[in-house]
Image (cartoon, rainbow, N blue to C red; front, side):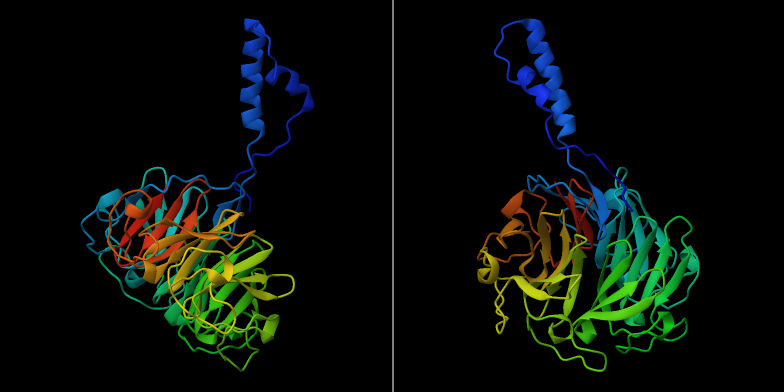
Amino acid sequence: MNIKKISVTLLPLFLFPFIFSTSCDKEEKDKSKQYLSILMLLSRCTQSLMGGSVQGCTLSLDAVVTTFAGPSQGTTTSGDTDATGNSVRFQQPCNITTDGTNLYVADMYNNKIRKINISTQVVTTLAGPAQGSTTSGDTDATGNAARFYIPQGITTDGTNLYVADRYNNKIRKINISTQVVTTLAGPAQGSTTSGDTDAMGNAARFYAPTGITTDGANLYVADVGNNKIRKIVISTGAVTTLAGPAQGTTTSGDTDATGNAARFNAPEGITTDGTNLYVTESLNNKIRKIVISTGAVTTLAGPAQGTTTSGDTDATGNAARFSIPRGITTDGKNLFVADFNNHKIRKIVISTGAVTTLAGPAQGTTTSGDTDATGNAARFNDPSDITTEGTNLYITDYVNNKIRKIE
């Protein structure tokens, strides 16, 4: 599961005399420089693939926003063209994940899964109908022969992609190297029956699953129509309800509680740091935290239990406001949220719940657009999802039909 590891953060004591030497001797100064270089290498943090993003090092961002793939600034033309950079076309790209080398996009209204090579910006269709066709369906097959119907959530463990196939009410699995698509959980090929049944594989039921993440052993699904968070054991396909109303009920609400006593209202985005889940609730306008080991649900940011007031206030915890938050990712220390209706990218410090606007219009304004710029001067139009390869953020800019990059 780990794709990158660079460790050792403690400074060996024997380096101190060289680093802090006040000698004027040139040889000694040269030695100090060499040891400082070694220190810089040794102090690098450890990164690993978790939750469909590369985590472990706190992102250092200048908030410079550019268009990574899709039409250039000033144009928002849709399509399904496989090409490079600004020549590429999407049709309302919804969700995004990365393995550190490539980005994978659920190109929702094209009914395809697109692959973007990060280093070259070359976009290809990994699974779903070939360029020029957008036919929907639920066929399990390889590459262009496979079919999806409004694919939305997407995550990866580095070997496979897992897709929340929303209108098919299924969780699909795509082997990245072979492009073979199968149904991991939800009704078998030829059926799209919805429901909320906890069961194994094809016997399980979902209702418009939208968000998905993984800790490497399990998948966690934001089952938006059922107002639940579901857990799927990848090795067996066993589906259970981790938080939200028990099987047979789909009652919405915003109750902070444990397991089946907790309530959600349209949970859409989900990510994990391996210990906790973080969920965006589009109708409650909150960011919820779920302890995986216990199922305990709390509100990390957004209005307190009993209120669902929207807004765009930068503040801490319950004083912060969102408006239809959707996509969410983490570097392990911070959360980054695609605040859909505010047309902004928000940052949340996990340890404190402090919320700020990283990019998009400043507090008090929610102007949309597609401007490539820095911080509050940048514009988005319904940013839908977000991921990181450990250095930058990548956003699906839904109405603009683009993939944006923040560095």
